[in-house]
Amino acid sequence: MSIAIAQARHIFGVKTGVTGNICYQDEQTIVYTSGAYCVLYNIDQKMQKFIPISDKANSMTALAVSPNRRYIAIAETGEKAIITIFDLHSLRRKKLLSSSEVESKEYVSLAFSPDSKYLIAQGGKPDWTLLYWTWEKAKIMATARTSNPQGMPPIHQVNSISHNNHS
Image (cartoon, rainbow, N blue to C red; front, side, top):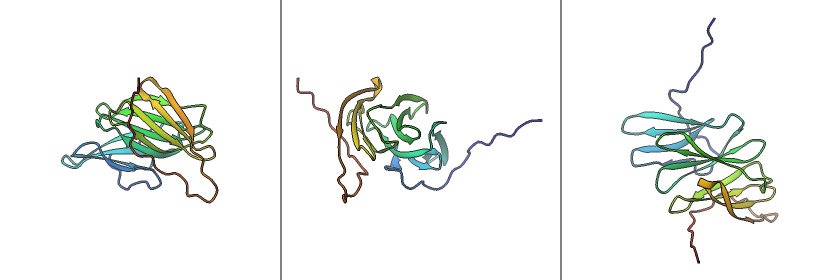
C-alpha cells in the first residue's frame, strides 16, 4: 500500500494580514504569501516556486526582500517568534533568528538595511521590542522597547534602515 503525498504545483490568492505580503524579487518575479507558503511567481515563464513555513510555525506575519534581491526574511509565529532568512537563488534556509529578549510570539514588521547586511524586526504585543540584527551572524546589535500606549494604533511597519558607523 502506498501513501500519496500532495505537493503544491500552483497556488493562487494572497494571504492578508502579513506585513509586506507582496513585493518584487526582480523585474520578472513577484514574491507573495499564500496560505502556509511564500510564493515566487515568474511572470515571464508563468512558473511558481514555493518556500513553506517552518514545521513548528503557525503562520507568517511579515516578510521583506533584501535590497540586493538575494535574500528574503520571513517572520513566523509559533511558541516563540522566529525569523527565517532564505537565499532566493537556491531557496535554501540561510539563517534562523530568534531572541529570548522578545516576549511576543510574533514580529509585525521586517526591513533590511540598504547594504542587506542588517535586519530590523518589530516585535508585537505585549512588549513591542525592536531588534537590530547582524543577521548573517545571528547577532543582535541593539534592542529597544517601542511601547504602544493604550489608545494608540498598533505598530505595523518599520521602513528601511541605514547603518552609520561612527568610529
